Length: 165
Image (cartoon, rainbow, N blue to C red; front, side, top):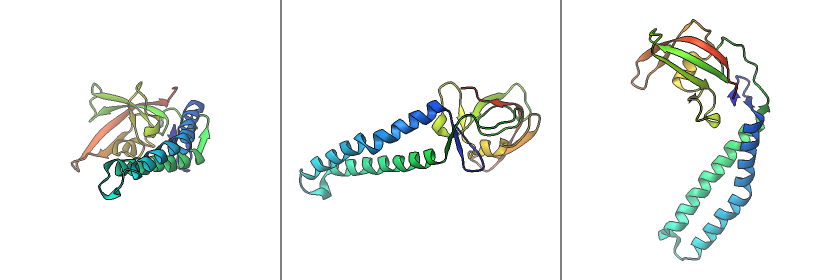
């Protein structure tokens, strides 16, 4: 999955199907399950001191937030492969960088939304400090990004190629 500046999220068919199935579960069976938990907790009596009720309500809030996130994501989704030019860092690209010009100290990662995080490759969000710093850069160019301590780090773009899944 990748995001472009037009607020379109590109998803593979597999990622789209997975997110759609999660949305269908959360807005159907999961809603019924949490409603039953809340009803059961209400029957226990005083709601001010009912830990089960408060926990179920908190779970319901988190679940509804996830439903809204998925709904928005899928509304802006396009299934297919994002247009990407090899050699230019953009969402959906596998990027290799060298830290502070030291070509032995490298990092390879997928620049994409955390929704598409994989165990196969480390994923950095385009909105992260590193993602923002390298996005739009070409192979051979230097990029800077802000560290948590307020200082800046420099990296060199060694490679940028489309993610193949």
